[in-house]
Picture 1 (cartoon, rainbow, N blue to C red):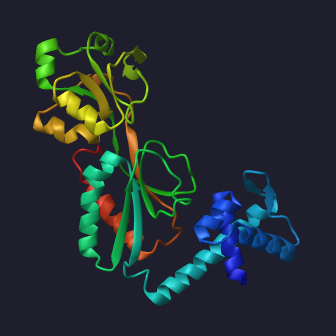
Picture 2 (cartoon, one colour):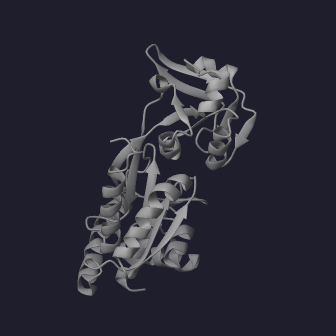
Length: 300
C-alpha cells in the first residue's frame, strides 16, 4: 500500500475501533489491515493502538497522529473532488437512513424530489427503527430522533417531536376521555413497542414527573398496526407526534393529555463529512433541512 492508502486504513481502524470493521468498510481482508497498521507503526517507531481481543483504542501518540492524518486526508479528498467536479455536481450513490414511519411519511417525498432535481445521483434508502452506526454501515446521512450520543457527527437540528397519547373520537365518546395520566388505568391500552417500549408511561405535571403502570392487552411491534387499532376504536395508544399527525389533523384520532406530555425530542440530520461535504450530501441536506423545517408535523 502507498502512504496515503495506509493513512486511510489507519483512520478507518481508529473510527471503527476495530480492524475487522475497518476491513469491511475498505473492502480489504482483515490481515491486510493488520499488516498495514503494523507497517505504519514500524515506520513511525510508535505504537498507535492498544489492542484487545474485541476492540482497538488509540494510544496518546495515536490520537495526535489521527488528528493530523484525518486533516491531511480531508485536504486530499477535497483537492481530488474539486478536480473531478464532485464537489460542485451531485453524483454517485447517496445512502440515507431514518426511522421507518418517519422515513416513509416524511423522508421518502424528499428523496423523490431530490432525485428529480439530480439526474446523476442514485439513492439507497434504509428505514428501520434502530440506531445503527452510519460509519460501519457505509451510510452518508441519517435522520435521528432523540439526543445524539456520538459527538463526532456533524448535526443539523430541524425541529422536535413529542410522544402523544391518542385514541379515536368514537372510543372517547363511548368510554370517556382521561383527564389525568392515572385515568389511563381504566382504559384499554395499545402498546406500540417501537415508540413506547415500556408499559410504565412517564408524564410531566406541575408537581414533577408522573409514572403510570399500564396493562396493555394489545402489543404491536409495528407502529402502523397500533395506529390502525386505535382508529378501529379498540383503545388508547402512545406514539410520536409525527406518526399520528395526519390522522389527528384528519379527525381520525384525538390527542389527549397534552398538559402532561414529556419533553420534546430533537430531530437531527447527521453526517460524517468534515469541513466540506461533497455535492450529493450537501445538496440533499440543504433540501431536507428546508422541507423538514417547513413540515407542520415537526415542532420548531
